[in-house]
Length: 114
Length: 113
Image (cartoon, rainbow over all chains, first blue to last red; front, side):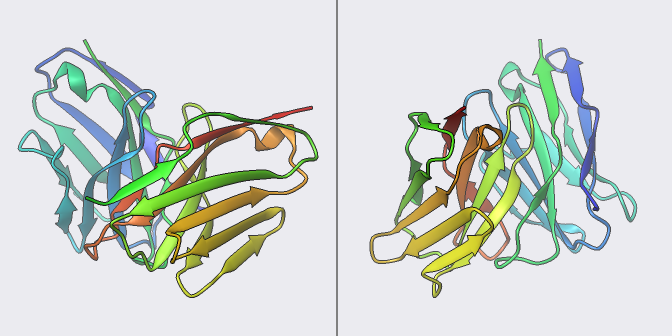
């Protein structure tokens, strides 16, 4: 069964450094998402991406964040200058359609900012 | 603002019993509601989607109801097993048509043998 994959599984970085989190969505899906989950808190939406552009972003997704689909398979989330409060699990998700479709989540990247 | 509430207290039940989890929402008129399962340190896994014109949806031992008047969904696991122990998340789409999901904080279910 196809699945969403994410790398790395765990990333440790120093405050102020740039990180790139990578995702390979399911191949025939058209809609892509990033969510994050701070330890013990709810899953929060960051950004949705369709047709090579951002369709919606949350208040969390400020100028320090960017997303890219550099080729036909990868979907990346970049944080330009990490802060301590960026420490969280970051989940990539994809779906074949919008409202009536489930989203398929990757296993997540645990980002630790020290 | 749109709000989703799930019982934040853990639910402990005996194996073989039916678990019932609640999801309430406010300031919302969702066309669809979804339930996901999340194990510790893992990503959410889709379980069921129910449409506003469906009162009930079933999949194996799972059943979801959707009451748009009460603004509530109930999620049932019948004949529960220890392997059903996990956190269960209720999710609704945001009002924009972008696929954004808004999650409740989840209810942790512990099924004891």
